[in-house]
Amino acid sequence: MRYLDPTQVSRRMNGRIVKNKSAKGLFFLATLFGLIVLAVLIYRVVVDGIGWIDWSFLTGRQSHDPERAGIMGAILGTLWMMVVVAPVTLILGIGTAIYLELYARKGRLQSFIQTNIANLAGVPSIVYGILGLTIFVRAMKMGNIVLAGGLTLSLLVLPIVIVAAQEAIRAVPSYLSEASYGMGATKWQTIKNIILPAALPGILTGAILALSRAIGETAPLTVIGIPALIIPFPEGIFDKFTALPMQIYYWTLDSSLVTEYANLAAATIVVLLILLFLLNSVAIFIRNKFQQRY
Amino acid sequence: MSLATVKENVSMAKNQSNAVISTSTVNGIVFDTKDLNLWYGETHALKEINLTIHEKEVTAIIGPSGCGKSTYLKTLNRMVELVPSVRTTGVITYKGKSILDKAFKVEDLRTHVGMVFQKPNPFPKSIYDNIAYGPRIHGIRNKKILDEIVEKSLRGAYIWDEVKDRLKENAYGLSGGQQQRLCIARTLAIEPDVILMDEPTSALDPKSTLKIEDLVQELKRNYSIIIVTHNMQQAARISDRTAFFLDGEVIEFNDTDTIFTNPYDKRTEDYISGRFG
Image 1 (cartoon, chains in turn green, yellow):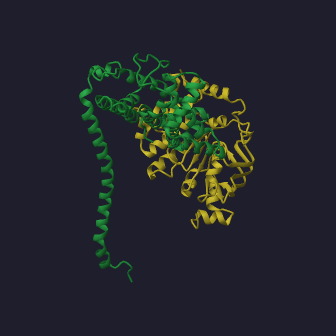
Image 2: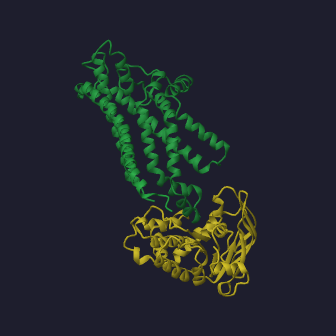
Image 3: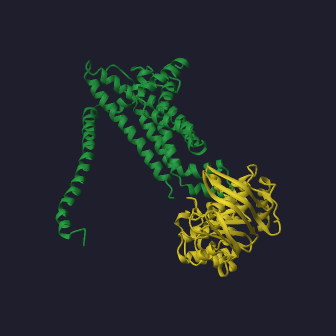
């Protein structure tokens, strides 16, 4: 006796094939929704802002007069902040990941730390702003300078870098480190020569994505009191500054008073998006260049 | 620079890191295992193992999956300690020195006792850098010396002619069999006395397997070899002595000829005649 009756099977066949196709259609629609929203957003911003982007806008100083306003100060402020964020998060992030993955004994303490790092990645950014205000601006008396802003953003994105680096280190196959240990290499020699080079593309990708996040953050900077209007350009990490997202925030806030501010905000958003796009391209380039097969 | 000077340099580097291991054996015995027990957490994986490994011989370890043969092999260079929950009792001596003491430096041990793994595991580096890795971590920086070590090791593993024109290419471009011989060459580059082989041909095709087996016969003139294998014909073909493991115990250890023609234990006979395992 057969359990699969051929006539029954072929009768059900069409229904199965229709379901198969509609599943594909459903997932395509889900993807399409996000794409359309993004496209509309970019279209609006570009239409509003593109006419305002010219050389004097990019290189000019800040001004209340929409015709004379420029964003060079905000661009420099953002870049100087990244000069603080990049080394701080890379050194602390990779260091923590190496310790947790390769040195810490697997136990309660380790899993407690692990859970907390995962939770920290989900803490709202404004909370980090309050932390930065309390520690860097007030307790350490830095004031609202680039260094304070950069350190605050470093705290914010550190969990992202740690988790990305941990995953990259964990993805290095154990047979590579075993081969190294098997030849009498010490743990540090194995980490330095085998594990880190193999994990590097993943670590760098995570780090640059974290930088992209930091570049766009506004809330923590408003909390530590970054002003809207600063006429002199920042020349180092100890100068007062403003940043691109702050510029966008304040112009949008005041657009009911001066309608051109909305266009200036849109133009600044375009510049910020291009900067983000460039950073992500660097991430992809680095990953492809260093990616090794194993 | 002559090859003799190279050897001298390498052994100088070894002597700096290690003053405890002598180069002579005790009565031709390399490893002497006495009452070895090993636990992974609560699992008793090795029970009262007593075995002697002789110099410049091939010792085969056979037995069904999960019998502890790989665990025993990895105890000989303490790679087994990479599993955090491992605990051992008993004594293993290497050339008269007790190696399970925590005070004994594993880095020293593994410089004298090299290992070839089940799956070919070259580093994602060039062929040259794969071979030079061992000498470099032991402090050899001189380019000429490294060149000579690389050539000597690749010749020793009979792969020099196949790779001499592509030393700077990534080792992943080699076939599986070539990769495994490269890994053997990489082990030779640290100039060990003993080579542990953990099922070195189980991932290879028959032709590559034969090449590795021939290579093992060549290597035993200069090295003591311990090989874990699933393949009983392989053990019979290439080994001088054979140990049969079952459920973490050594059931029988004897000359390979005796084990395969006239085993004294019924379980050994059942296993080698293919009745289980």
